[in-house]
Image 1 (cartoon, rainbow, N blue to C red):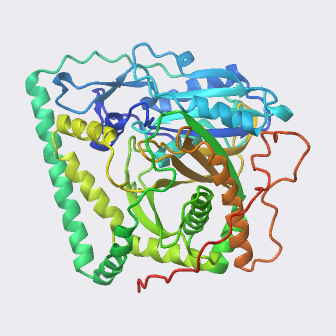
Image 2 (cartoon, one colour):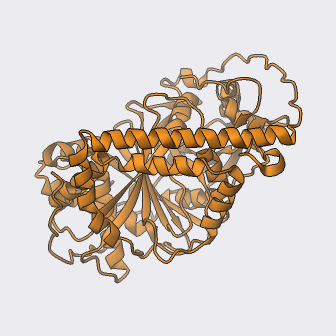
Image 3 (cartoon, helix red, strand yellow):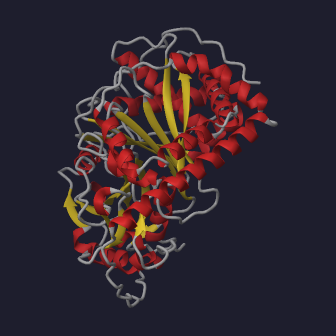
Length: 516
């Protein structure tokens, strides 16, 4: 897969969404995405760096830096980095001994904490040495202004190969055409840019409103009624959970994995989608985590925001093409299958009611505002503590990476755990990705707000076993390795030991909302 080059020789201006990720970012809200990937052997550093450099012509954005707009009237632009050096982007690090799961997760937390350096292209790779059992690891970061999760997955596929032989081959370098330095824009050019951007935003908002009205007021009136029926409980869900506190910026990372076949078996036996199963497991785990912190979950909801891909098959387009689907899910449904049905009913109602389209429409309206005011808006939002949270947690399914193993520099990738940005008052974030028959979870947390995020990871496993049994699936598979005598599991055992305690259910199930 080749990612299309940036069209034309002139600088490419960031969209309102892309620029928003730059405006919103600060120490407490680092807005880079990441993966923590495990390989079956140490990654040859020089070969890997040479491979990445040979593929950079396929990804022009990886050689571009962010430049502020003249007179600060427009959004920033992507421009060629005249001082690009691959050595400023690929680093070699050693994990602390003994190089087990705990040490790798701690290293990932330290790497994911600082903001990215905006004086160079907004990505970096860390090759990790010193893991137990002769394994290797890669921790890769990419700023959210550079790409969304879908494009990030496409780029990762481009940098890896489907065979060991293909993963050690270098692309023949192509001569880079020297670009004529662009002349400095005048004040007239800057004003024209502002007017054009605002008009485009207004037209996009108008078109989005017309499309939404046509859909809902035509054959979608029943869908709109289902959405309206959910509004009372959606409004009731606006309250903080234990991890909704001001963040400090220090990050903790942990991960989990399930067999994708087991998740598919649950979906087939109990209904819903794979995303519904993921949200069910996360909600039940969050309920346990909330009770662990001595808070009740009776008549309480967790408001989860799920990013939605808007590319509609146009893979490879640089930047962000996404919206968000908000769902409010009950935390006190005792039966796991009924919980899955409750989740499925609510997500289906929000989809049919075009909730993500409404969020996209709101984003279009913001895009119609002059860029300078957009910057003030996002920077102001990032520093204001609201009386009540807009939502509690982000959970993103970034899509399937590959159904078969991929390779880098001759090494087979065993697992790739994603990370979604979090911060502000969102102390925990959850990202999920499928790869080579596994469903891989990456949990990121603020050290100050949720230092015990590993307990949430343990509760994910407990919730999975409960749902698997409740769905009456015979011969459940082992979802974690057997306990060993060593203090830390090896990096090939990215699953925790059995939780010491299990928090019992606190209340009877709540009634489901009728969305028919």
